[in-house]
Image 1 (cartoon, one colour):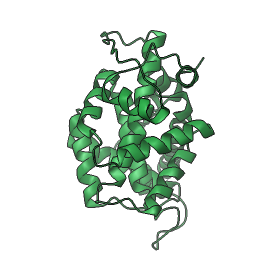
Image 2: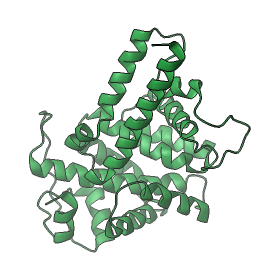
Image 3: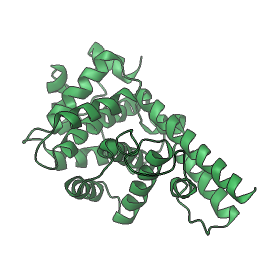
Image 4: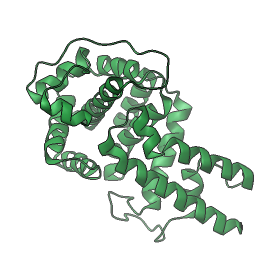
Length: 270
């Protein structure tokens, strides 16, 4: 049975406690197990451990998404619609989507314990940097859903990165990649081209997605491409704790990485 099936069925032996467990319990109307098992240093998960991390990832993703939407002091109907559009990109059941919406609402409440949730989430991830990076990419994608990243959102995202141990230079790299991915897929301006950009993906965006300069050697481009594919491989991310239902987003990212590499290869004649 999947982590969500066990959660919905009331099998909470693997469940986290702390603020994440309290928030999810309130959303689902359950009294979750308050025990928090320690994580060892082994990269392999026991089945319960993986389910616990998947649950923590799901809960933190949507509550923090709500907090970011509230960063400028209010959540507009457009921001709620944009959050729902991000949820629609994931392979969520109707029950899970409703839970995600309820978690989003918890995150935008004035008493949401953001720092406590982030601290527990970091503990659950236990230095799994690729998983934390995917979390930030999802938050950036949600923040950019309207085509822009305003100053309040940017400052809150920098704070989130700091709490999760991600340096600012790494955040800037991820932000540049996510912005380029939106241009590359034609989603700039909230899905509508709001400027005079030429139709279709640009070579500049392709280099940004691959996280290399146009002056990089062919070998450097290929090395970065392979590293990004490995980092975003859906099965690898799920093995580290990404909920299976979010594999669709990881698969889309690997597709965009491959498209970007093909464009660069075509431009270079390789």
